[in-house]
Structures are given as C-alpha cells and as structure tokens.
Length: 84
Image 1 (cartoon, one colour):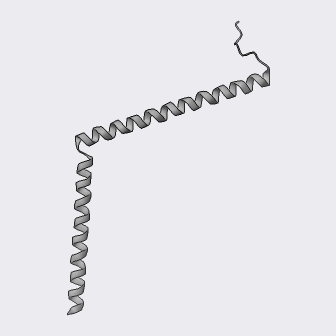
Image 2 (cartoon, one colour; image 1 turned 60 degrees about the horizontal axis):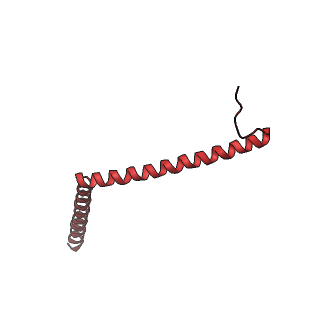
Image 3 (cartoon, rainbow, N blue to C red; image 1 turned 120 degrees about the horizontal axis):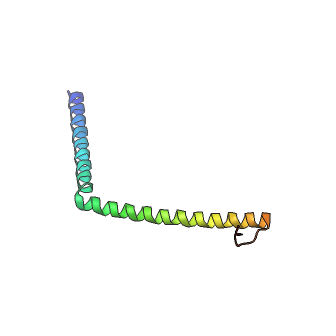
C-alpha cells in the first residue's frame, strides 16, 4: 500500500516539475521572439558582425603588407612599382 502511494506521489511530483519546466521554457521563448526583442537582438548581432569584419579586414591588410615587405626584401625590389 505504501509502496504504491510512494510511487504515485513520486510520479505526480515528477509530472508537476516537468510541467513547470516546460511552461517556463515556453514563456522564455515567447519573450525572446517578441518583435521588440527580435529587433534588439538583430541589432546586437549586426554590430558584432561589423566589428568582426573590420578586425578581419585589418588583419588581412597587415598580413599582406608583411608579405609584400618580405618579398621585396627577398627580390630586392623597390617599394614603388615599375611602369611599363
């Protein structure tokens, strides 16, 4: 008798806990998908992409300048390109 009651209460408690968890997750998802939150998160992502893009371009420019200086040193070329 007590064994059945124990497992019934255990199942009921697990069901309630799972229900609360699901409801909270759904409410958080609803809040995240509201138009005002979507606009704010999109703006934040765009700013992050812009800064990463600028950093990558700057790193590429520095790398190309270093490689050009290295090649000019190897081939003893002048820093100004020659005209044909």
